[in-house]
Image (cartoon, rainbow, N blue to C red; front, side):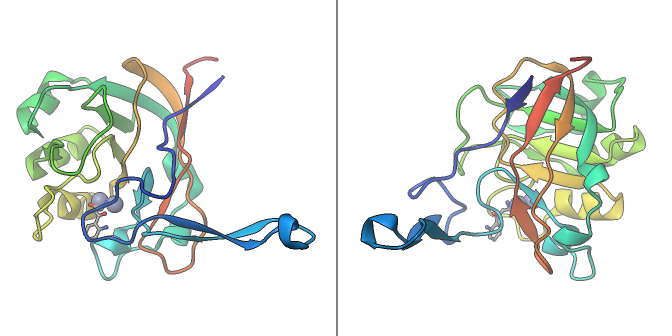
Length: 203
Ligand SMILES: Nc1ccccc1C(=O)C[C@H](N)C(=O)O
Ligand SMILES: [Zn+2]
Ligand SMILES: [Zn+2]
């Protein structure tokens, strides 16, 4: 049984401050004589639950369509670190040893807002990389602070080839799962929303 760990996307949903708001507009309407209903979606590539392409933080980085789908699927551990103000190297040391290359950080039981979420220290990212982690997921909207322009955690992910999933809705118990979080193959995109799902290990 797959568990949805994605945010619902709707007009008026929270978005990154200053970013384009999510819009879904009807283009064709049966009620107006069209043969079908169709819509037009407009949103930031970082809306809701999404994958960052390396190109988001590295002008020479892979764009979203070049990420191998296998890199965003597989054995994952959900780790609960609620009540912390940031994810430090010491907190990562406390969750060792890791058994999976995908680690999803659950830092709140509620919905995240954009002005209070734990960012990751670069040293925490480097230690995760040292332990073989290739995907970091978080229920926060970013792995760096809201006002950061240096983006140390993103740059550490660039340097250690770690992919990033942000805006997860991890209302699940900590433990081991199988993850699927595959973006659309959007050419030249810096990121893309995903419908991330988990299946309890062995189900
Ligand atoms: N929309 C933005 C515009 C400018 C800077 C950051 C964002 C973000 O959404 C943060 C992003 N999710 C990140 O990968 O950290
Ligand atoms: Zn992002
Ligand atoms: Zn990011």
